[in-house]
Structure formats: structure tokens, C-alpha cells
Amino acid sequence: MSEVEGRRVGVLALQGDVDEHTAALRRAGASPRTVKTPADLADVDALVIPGGESTTVMKLLDRAGLAAPIVWRVRAGMPLWGTCMGMIVAAREIVGVDQPSLGLIDIAVRRNAFGRQNDSAELELDIDALGSTPFPGIFIRAPWIERCGPAVELLAERDGRGVMVREGNVLVTSFHPELTADLRVHRYFLDMTGSEAGNTSTAA
Image (cartoon, rainbow, N blue to C red; front, side, top):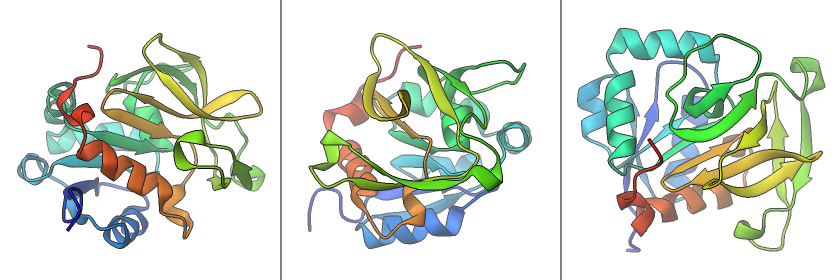
């Protein structure tokens, strides 16, 4: 068994494409768990925040008593990956709206920047961290990144805008790897859970 096989990875299960992430994580060798309560969160080594609706999820996080524990765990080193809505929830700044977020990665994002539902697209993305084969990026009402802090690593762009970045133990993508058969982003995140990044907190 490899270092990351069987890793307990939580998927925030308040809204969104929970089942798709759970299935992909299992295929990639992890032991996924749904997270709905602080007790669930305490039982995982890493957390995925899936796509959904960001304003609703922030309210549900507060209602479930999860917002503060997630912030504490991530700043203590727990790896976190946010996809689409999860990128918005994790960001330090949301451009153009007065909306709360967890502030876990030093980026400014713009909601629905690539268009509404009927502007959804699948595009090949060059992601050096995943190898030379392009990755099938599925964008659905996707945000983009307008500003990255100095410690943020840009991993992929679309039309000159960041769509996959990492800062320490926090990874975010504006596209949906869980909706493809390609497990490379999930495996990249699992590698983060077994690396020194899992013991390095992001900027406060």
C-alpha cells in the first residue's frame, strides 16, 4: 500500500457534487468520508469542498458549526481542496460582492466569471504539475482568479486567468475534475496529504 492509499479524506456534504468527489477519491485510492459535523471533520486527514452555491454553503457552514473548525484545522496544516464553489469559499477576497468566505488562500476570485450555465465548457488545460498530457477541464458557471498573493503558486490558466492554484496546504480549482474519468488532480491532492505540505499552515 502506498503512503496515501486509505487516507481519510473528507468531502464536505452540505451541498454540491459530493458523490462524484467521493467516487473519484475512492478510485484514486483514498478512504473518503462525508463531513457534515465538527465530529466528522475531526475524523479526517484532509478535506474537499465541492461545487455548489457559495452563499448557501457559507450559511450552512455556520449553521453546522463547521466554519471555525475548518479554518483552525487548515491553518494547523490540514490539506484542503476547493473546486469551483469551493474555490470561492476558500478565497480571501470575492470581487464585486459583499460575501463572507473562509479566507484560507490569498487570492481574489470573481464568481461566474466564465459565464452562466449555458456558457459551460470542457477545455484542455496544460498543467505541468500533472505531466505533459492536457487535462480535461470542465467549467460550469466557473469563477476565475483576479489576484494571487506572493506565496500562491499558479498551476493552470484559462484565457490568461488563474484556474488552479496552490498555497501551502490549500489547493483550489475553478473547474471540476470529479466530473471526468481523469484522476490526476485527485491524486495530486492525495500526494499533498502525504507530504510536508500537510504540516505547513497557509498564511493567516
